[in-house]
Figure 1 (tube, one colour):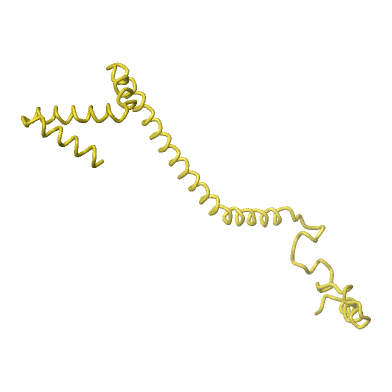
Figure 2 (tube, one colour):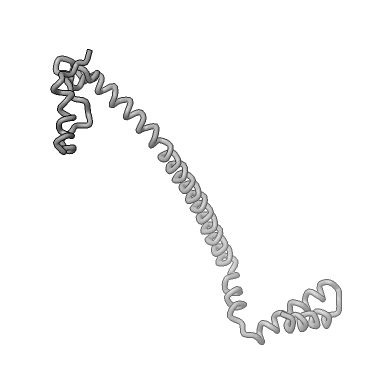
Length: 157
């Protein structure tokens, strides 16, 4: 038994014959009693099925977005760990530099290092010669051998 009246079923056909395709509905005409859903029936409380449908839709969307969010969270955690390691290394280097400067200052070695770095070419050559001669003498060798090594190093390097 067709729940639709003859007039309802022939409306689309007569509209098409008159050249009015924009007026034709894509849905089959008929009373809302046959749609199977609760939202179109005033006698039925549609809130419960609608809430269940929306809850399922929310769960579905949450599952879809959870993967990308987890990926971004993992990438951010890796970045935080890298920054933490970098920060720890920076603090360690800063601490080492501070301790080295304290040791140099306490032993009055900083002024000697500054003197070495500010020497001109003649003074540097003399210092290298003195160091090489001292090494040769400490090894029990002729001091002239140390001077010769220093002389070769000066021209080689």
